[in-house]
Structures are given as structure tokens and as C-alpha cells.
Amino acid sequence: MATLADPTPDYTILPEMADDIFTAPLARPAHVAEDWLEPRQADYTAEDHGVWDDLFARQLDILPGRAASAFMTGLEKLDLGRGGVPEFGQLSQELRQLTGWSVVPVPMLIPDHVFFWHLANRRFPAGNFIRTRETFDYIQEPDVFHDVFGHVPMLTDPVYADYMQEYGRAGWKAMRYNRLKALGALYWYTVEFGLILEGGKDLRAYGAGILSGPTEVRFAVEAQSPNRIMLNVDRVMRTDYVISDLQPTYFVVESFEDLYRQTVERDFDRLYRSLPAGFTYANSAVIDVDNVLHRGSQEYHLRGGRGSGARPV
Image 1: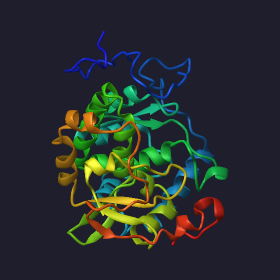
Image 2: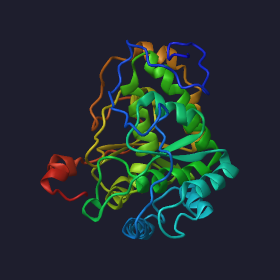
Image 3: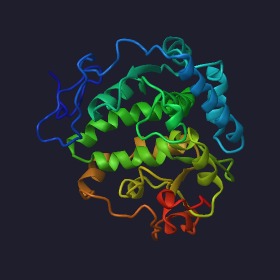
């Protein structure tokens, strides 16, 4: 059996977890195997499909001019607005023809090494449930709308699709060095909350955490509060982040080729040996090495953020 300690892993095999690798313990539901895949996609109700359609319509009202061109093109290629929650089999067939990826249903957040394994094999795990009307505006655990609407259109872009596969492969190395927090910060500030400077001047969002919610789209691209800093991988992997509120800082790439170069071509062995166990920089920090596009006022967070009812300005 392969283990995460193997220096040259076989990505086709799900490895065993070594005892000295620290990761969040998750209880595997009895009906799923070690790959954590659901036997089939959920049977959604008419109400579930209605929630998807309403969420989709709301986002389409605000994304043009704010979402990355690659994302908008991906939405069109996959026709995610054809009505109701997309059927994963058909979606995977279309996506596979474009970039070789597929979408697979999982019951909940899954263990890190399993998540990385699926990404390394160009499978994107998507939550097999959808939020309710009561959680329409915000849900803590990613559902099928966040995962499919937010993430999957970007997988139609060949360079970004390759980046996601390489991220999965990099995950096992991060676990061997016990640097999951650092690699998680990279995922957070790129895949979930990344911005891109299209044409060197047009700021757009490509991160799924931004694109799947109405408030953060405007806040990330237009508000005065947050910092917007050009991506520096070493710096980002030392930076804390906010899980349950808008981000104080966003990191910006020049292109997806730039994102790929900065990550895939980086010597992560040397980087992991130099990283501390915790984060070095606060999520609102601006430091001397930063290439700053916009130094934010941090007004939203100084007024208390979401819990205080502060306006996202």
C-alpha cells in the first residue's frame, strides 16, 4: 500500500495516512468507501432546483464586468443555467471533452489526502446537497451551488485546470512536511478568493468564494476596505485568512500562466523547510515586499465586520 511518505507517489493510488501527519479528523459516513464518493448524485426536489435557479439568476445579475472572462466563458460552455442543479454525468462528459476533468459527488467536506487525490486525477469533489431558503445568503459548508457554479466553470480553462491538478499533487508533499496550513492559505487566496488583472488594468474575480456570493463580488473588486496585492506565493503561504467574513486582503495574478509559474515551478521542498508552523502575517497586513495595487482602509473590519452589521464598503 502506498503512503504519503513515498517520495515519488503514484497518484492513481489513494495512500494511507502516516501516524505523524496532522490533519483534521473526519468521521467517514458508513455509506461511502475510502474514496468518500457518494454512490450517486442526490435526487433533488423541485424546491432544491428552484433554489439553484434563484441563486444562479442572482449571480448573473452582478457578475458581468466583475467575474474573470475565463469564468464567464466557462459558464457559457457548460450552460450551467439550463435549469436546475446540473446532472454530474452530463456535466462531466462536457467538461472531460474540454480539459479532461470530471465532477464527482461527496457527502461533505472530505479528508485532505482524499481531496488532493481526486484533484491529482482531475476529479473535482462537489457537495451532494444544496442550501435551503433559510441559508440562501450564506452557508458554512460548501454546497453544490458553491462547488459547481463557483469552481467548475474555471476548470474549462486549460491552464487553470492544470494548476488545479498540480495543486492536488502538491498536497501530498505539504502533508509530508506537515505544512497543510500553508498550502491551505494558497488555496484560499487563489482558488477561493483570487483576483486577476486582465489586460494589466481590468480587475476581475476568479475565486469560487467570491463568485458564488453576491456581497463579496462587489467588495473584492470595488470596495475601499480591502487590500489588493499582487500574488507572491512565499508571502501568501505565511498569511492568515478569514473563514466566516469578507476578506481584509485579496491577492491578484497577472494571468493564469503567471499563477501556474509561481506555484508549479516553485521549489516547495525548500519553502516548506523554511516555513514556521503557524502564520507569520495577519490577514490585513501590508509588508515591505508587497506589490500593492490598493492599500485598503480596512473600514469594514475596523467597524466589526459581519457580526456588527457593518456595511461592506
